Image: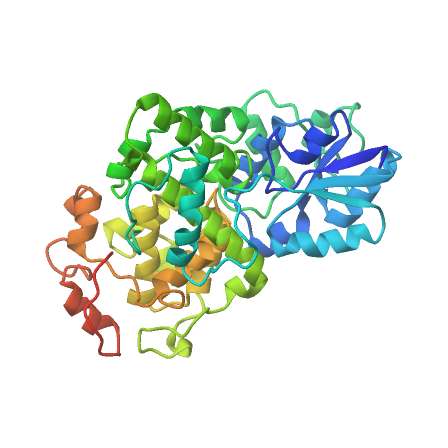
Length: 154
Length: 289
């Protein structure tokens, strides 16, 4: 993709967004998702917080149907594709499919908190943590974690 | 689409049609514009400011040792990073590195940072589960352990709760704080969720949707799975608290002006007593942790 636009979504509102870093200077857009905002009746507290985060990023702000707005923004800039970063929300996967059907879509991976195998046991936090904690502390160069953690310390 | 005239004037001629404005004289002006753009949205701006600069200020101020010691107290040294992490203004990897750098510089033993690293792990855990479960996070992961059938829980939140007039100073205070600021201390979230699900017998989903509407860090995975943890559909026991626990971790700030402090506080009992009052199944007594 020679001339992409960057799609910023609400899981990646940092200047270190991998799509922004991969395409410096490319036109970037954020769409306030009309359907989602109405369905979840999001408060002005939440929308205002998002807005303030976005005002510190080099991004055009839109409000409407995400797919329509993204495709229109791509057309406005004569783009040949869209670059974005992976999100966890299943809504992202649905939008990704619809957009990908219209234009090439590149999805970049943000840095993981801890590298675990895809088959990691997630049945309870304690099982996850037994796998994750030693990896994290090895990463810190601190060797083994300091002491066994309590099972349900919340 | 047609913006209200005031917004159009602010947009000026330089922006293509329907691009939202990015220039504001101040926060009040931004709030007024947002009210016009999102007329259905309840509430107003939070005192907690969005943006990378505010996030970096909060990140630079973390004290992992004080956090580990005092995080369960409402007045404790919590980091306030959650809204920024939720929206990727800060990545979990970046916070992890900041904590490990703090550890090196402070010359503290690793245990000093263990609790904060552990809590970052919770966030990562919920995200991994969301990837695995998708919209399944809205359904009970397991049967409830309360002895009550799922259909005995109300589908909607009671009006007195939403209007912050339950008469319980603690719960009314939490509702007001949630809706005014978009943030609640984790312990307050747990108490409020437990009150909603177990004392008022409301489906956890109603509470989860309400929290997501207001919490700046409202993340469906962390939020819903924590509600399920309280409800007991994602834990081996329902989460309960009592007055002694709430009073201790709030330094008594609610009980001192509560009309029900003398008689009628529904939380003023032992865990055994609350357990038999609230749940049908006869099981072993439950503590808060």
